[in-house]
Length: 72
Ligand SMILES: [Zn+2]
Image 1 (cartoon, rainbow, N blue to C red):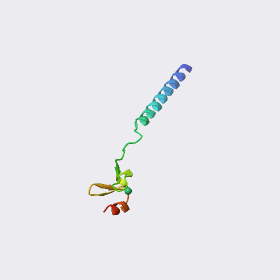
Image 2 (cartoon, rainbow, N blue to C red):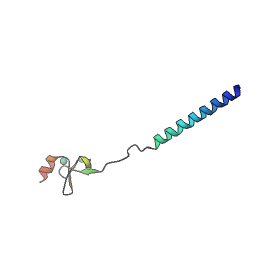
Image 3 (cartoon, helix red, strand yellow):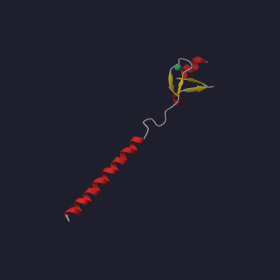
Image 4 (cartoon, rainbow, N blue to C red):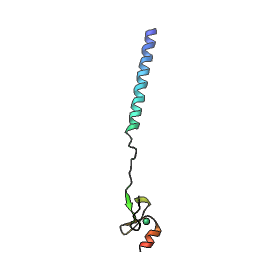
């Protein structure tokens, strides 16, 4: 009887170790930066900024509305 309990415990421990190993492997596969954003350059002052934060006028990028206005 003691052998059977030991066997069941051993199976549970092995199952638990394999489960935690596969879980940590899945987490490690996730890339640290899933969607790197395009960087654009302000036409007026040359500063680099993400495209979503820039002001775009006829294919030119500006870091702020002020620089957009000054360029006109
Ligand atoms: Zn600028």
